[in-house]
Picture 1 (tube, one colour):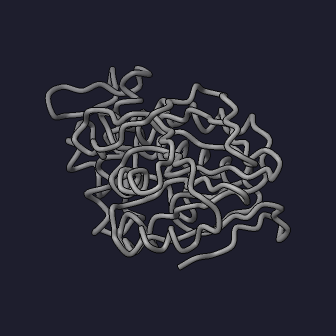
Picture 2: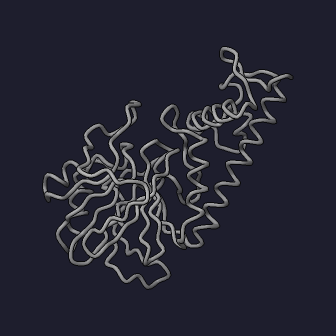
Picture 3: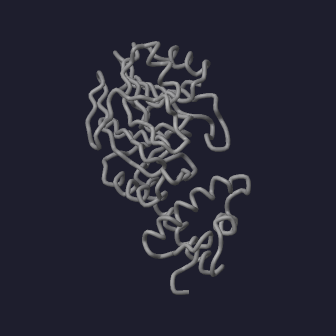
Length: 277
């Protein structure tokens, strides 16, 4: 599926969104691949190494593909980069994969952007913003003249992203949300789902959701006195469908680790409790 990306209904750039055929519980309708530029094409998040998706990207690009930009290296976002680069000769931009067993180890960037670096890619200028949390190598990319922020899995439509420890980090994630709130943008182009307006409000709502979940974690730990991660998960996530609890447990572990670093919970073996209770 190929869709125009038109912030405010009047994008000045030749921008397309191609949705990969990998719909699922954790990928929603599929991974979004964005094609940006008029005279030369930037491919942002090429997605999984899928032959049909590869052909869809080539067909949707009206100009030579010169750059491939990756928000992070989870296996639904970057594996097609290698095939696409080999076919087109495009330059690979992004951060290398961390070693946590969940990454696309085929991704080898030719340029690792610095935090805040402005990337001039043909007629497109993207500012790279390092936003660790979901993964340590997550970057968002800001198309300033459109006030459009490409967020990968850092901000998603309609759901909060899973934080995947040990590489994923809740403290870093919260700091990254605060970092985004200081930027000038109006629209969010997420890694999964549709374009979102009122981007600052979306990020603030996500920040508040995380803070409310953290408060619920504390209340639940206090109510149990001491409990394992497995016992806490269905109680903390009683508002989430049971089939998602295995993923929710990962985010709960990230919340507990943050609270432990903050000195608000302690761990003894497999048991978590509030200190001095």
